[in-house]
Image 1 (tube, helix red, strand yellow):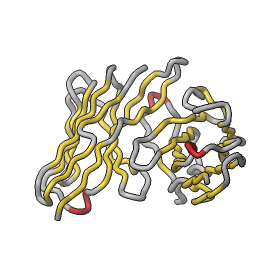
Image 2 (cartoon, rainbow over the protein chains, first blue to last red):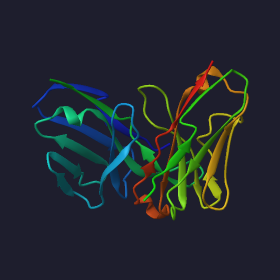
Image 3 (cartoon, rainbow over the protein chains, first blue to last red):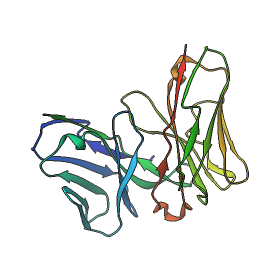
Image 4 (cartoon, each protein chain N blue to C red):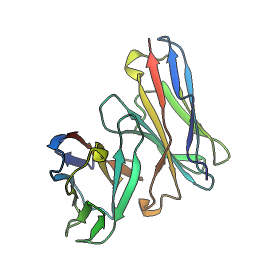
Length: 114
Length: 116
């Protein structure tokens, strides 16, 4: 079936360093969503990208949707301890039963070394 | 307004017992989703509802798992004859309709299920 993969699985960075997570789909996506899950918390919606090549920014976070709409990235500039958590991408995929559902990526867990 | 509410927040039970988890979605959200998350792992899709119907039950791990939704609102996830591998956090999310799935999902705090 359709898959949404993320790399890396884990990332440890010094506070102040940049961080990037990459999301790849086996099929073209109509849109991509990004979520953040703090340790012990639940996923929280960050942003949605719809257009090919779209780039959106939220303060130190930059989100990009690939031209082919099969990949996406999240880049954090100058990480802070508040950025700790797991970042998930999610995109609509079609199940084996022909139903469309939102499939979450495998997630990238970010830890910050103060 | 109120977010997605799940109960209980924690459940500890003995192997072989049945458990029922409840999710109360955001008012007006027609789509409701159940996920399972084991410690340090990603989100495992279980089932979703559009209104009261469940178009896709393919994520349910076994026939011990079932879910229903009534009145287009509250949903319950039932696990019969629980096994230790069922231990996980069960997350519920809701959103406006699934059309093209371009609506953000809003998650509850989850139910942490521990099977002894």
